[in-house]
Image 1 (cartoon, rainbow, N blue to C red):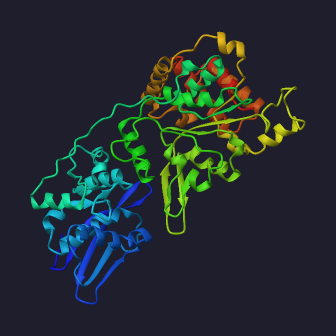
Image 2 (image 1 turned 135 degrees about the horizontal axis):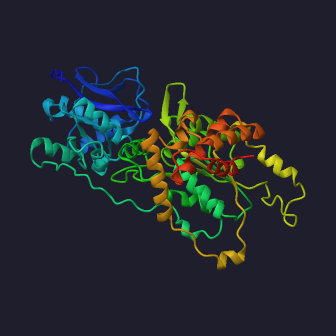
Length: 496
């Protein structure tokens, strides 16, 4: 650290997407008219830090010197957003005032929001900051409620997690040393409803198993109450666990979205089900601070859109990029950020606005025109990106009472996990992401593909997705190559 009698520096971070960008907080206390100025493209929240810092220092019995206090956030051309700059600004001021030593502060980066009484409040982005701190070979000072979140970055990271500025000051003065936080692994809680609660709907259960095995997208249509939403809610219970890298990636996204604090990291595949009134920025990300949207919060998990045609056309069309590439680009005037968005897309819809198309007694007077108009809300390119399609036929009241319960989720999940393991061992990614050129077909399956592609007039994308589904069915069947029966079953789930 380069120091003079009235200048101090400490490391902090800004955020672009899920990445933490190092920012140096510089302070100069110089002679002149009393002032507290923050420069370096701060937003309103950062600008308001001067009042929170002034009050927090006052709670310690410290008064700012009657001089010109200049805070510079380096690099100066990078926009700075968020209340997490409160703590590094306060520490830099205390260092410049001689209350803290330059040597002690130079070994750490800091992130945290201050209350008026000096307590530290949780803030977004701690996990990303901790991962970046490792590369800088520094320790990290963060709020106590987020010690576990920071510890997930590394067991070797030097973490100070005070509850207040007073605790941190006592630590550096040697009065009360803060204990190093230890990682507490919380056992995962079962997600989603159990498949055994579903009676009948054998085709729906099979489609769900194939979807989970290969990481595919699924569109379910059918009359109200047929069981579409219930099937979707069972999907998390049969999905494979997240690996360590996926846990960190998902947790960084949720942390930046302000939805992961303390030890509540995302250890299970997330399940997001936004309402059809969701706005475009809420779905894909953006807003004034370019925060992650639902498609990114569902990364490595499930995005479920119920009543699909009721979503705005702009929202539906915005899903085309992440469904194809697994990332979403949020472009704003001041910055452009990329968020990971590799999710399983599950959608449900009624066959028409009234929901009873095909039922002569209950259908509205506009049938079948109402069904055509309703489905026309979904564009062809959007539908072409869906791997499986299923019409869910309602179960009769008698079957609901007398039919036996189906397999439990644990039994189906074991088959899914085994099929997914074969995919990772063979190609490194789930079947939903594999190239069609890497899928080996038997001679009979190759002939069937040629005939089906011509008859159904499949696009190159549609044909690729058909082969991916067939490959997942073959994996569930423990088959080395895709055979004709696997392809026929995949064709049965292809959107007509």
